[in-house]
Image 1 (spheres, rainbow, N blue to C red):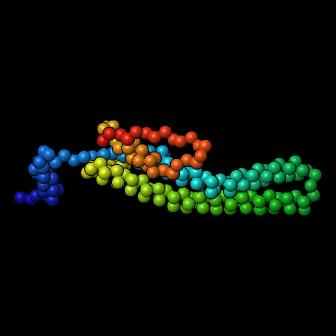
Image 2 (image 1 turned 135 degrees about the vertical axis):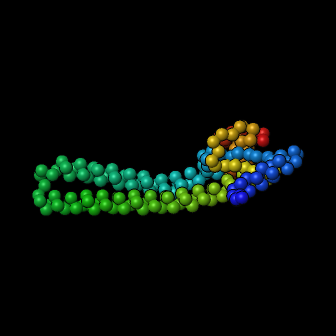
Length: 187
């Protein structure tokens, strides 16, 4: 008689489930991490920081591209009246400028991706820590984040964690309108 390991494991799990006392209920919560990444004040600070750091370089590149387009348009217009050596020099200048802009674009993309990844990793650690703290304070046994297809609002703790994050966010500068705080969800 052969008994598979899977059958033994399944039997053990079923036996363990029926042997649990009725009072040992497990408190489960679900959190939408993507929503925390989108709506938390800390995420908004990261987004604004990245925009402030890389926005000027992006604007400069856009201006350089526009200037190159203007130079190319002028070249196209003057092409018929240019001497061969002038045409060759203008083409080389346009080509070199286009390469320089492409190099700067790639550099900006690499720099911004690296910084974004670094900041998102920090933010992820902060958000996960906040979820853990909230779960411990509210005596949750399990909090599920990704891979949830459906959950009832009764076990969704996203709003409560978001409210906690908002309470820890730096206060806005004078003259700025405060963000409305959402009431915590009841677990």
